[in-house]
Image (cartoon, rainbow, N blue to C red):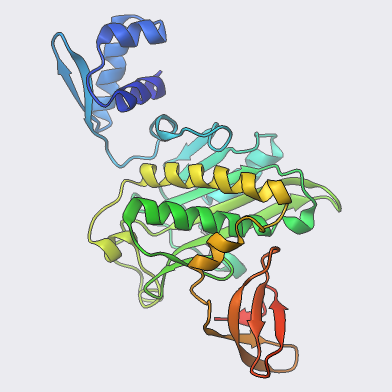
Length: 319
Ligand code: BTN
């Protein structure tokens, strides 16, 4: 009921009478009044005016299932939301949910992670209350070899949402880092459980440095946050809602062709490596080549100094 009340207050943009809330939700005035009290306790600024009703003036920066669901307008992404005040890793939680049969689109969000995971076995700094740690559980009916492309779909969605919510000119560093002014703002980690020819589930975890004011010594030169870039704080739930919306849209495009044909342009426009030299780690030697953009299956096309072009797979390039 809290989600519904929040949704009604948000969508009306003005006052909603107690009567309207009771009728729509089929509950008593006392029940509505109780929920309004809970919202106030959680930090929502809800104004109550006699003869007019309730109006939401401001929301706290909290990550609860009710807050998130009241902001979602999606068909499948985030229809189930599981929120943790603290957990080991949202990817680990999503995999457990995947094993337990949770539906396609289930979203796991945490306010802090104790064992946040980055790519290549690295740790992901996951302090409480300031950043986004989210994972989407997917059950795509596609061959397992195509699943890595979902990471690039997530990169497109996160980049679009970040641009929309902050105006920042975010870019994608192939294959799936989100950077701004040359520093890393967000990372994506996709893991999956498959049979030889069948995907049980895929989990795509996205970590975004949102209101971080300071990073640890080890990463302060290469990491940045929305706060450090814009000087203002961002409400995490609004950004998550935008990512989930964009993901649903881009996922539909991906499914149409089961590749990135329809997203290639969006991706390449944001590609920070485009027309820049990248280092290719070959079997016997390392060389530099000019990055041109991605193929419809997500490999990076590079042009060598002798004019020949080749496709590079993740792991073969240091940029
Ligand atoms: C990278 O190394 O760039 C990937 C970082 C991915 C971090 C996110 S935070 C949410 C999800 N849970 C994790 O443990 N990792 C991912």
